[in-house]
Length: 278
Image 1 (spheres, rainbow, N blue to C red):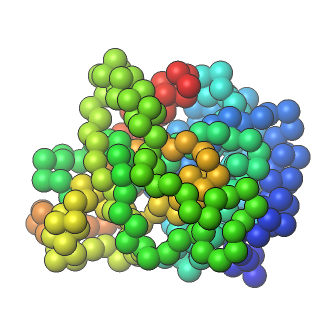
Image 2 (tube, rainbow, N blue to C red):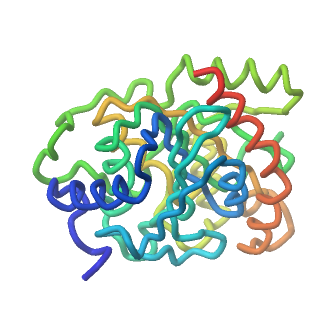
Image 3 (cartoon, one colour):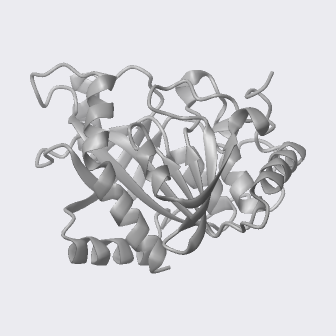
């Protein structure tokens, strides 16, 4: 069934990459950008955009989460050829980790050398005041899934080094630009959980003790696959709400989407500034 095929299979990756390459023609993307919940407007910044619906890409299912379109957008951002993934595949939708990582493997086949991942996340650090942006310095994989499971995929390392999953030099670049642009940019550790339910107050207390500053339900499978292929990664979380137990307010996905829209312009400016300086 489409979307349930093993995303690491070289034949599927090749077929998907060929389909995308045919549609985007002469565009040779150097940077890929993955957009999280409520952050789809970033794709509107792409110039001379060519849009490729997921329905036209082998192995790409339709995203089921609200706020996620189902298309790749190729073009230029600040003069740099980019490929934007507008709508990701979540494990909580029933997809294996390999399917969540399939787009990244396609990006690698197309020649992408830098991956920018974004997501919406709940704020655990008690000084966070949503909505705000958090640069990802590290992550905790509490999904207990890994896209590298099984046979080694073509072009990937069996045991990739994860000591610096979010490239240190790219983080310095992002912080420098944020300071210049007067964008408030926090930095911290992102905990990835399976979802789709929001966390309980007890789970948030546990995550806080484990060293997490924010929590979400995505991103980590993509970053692991990217690092296995030698792609540099930069991650930014949109802190859209205070995590359970840290506020009396109930949590809702509508709140996540609304808060994401509030910082979308800042995030687009940050991404554009980083891309222009690569």
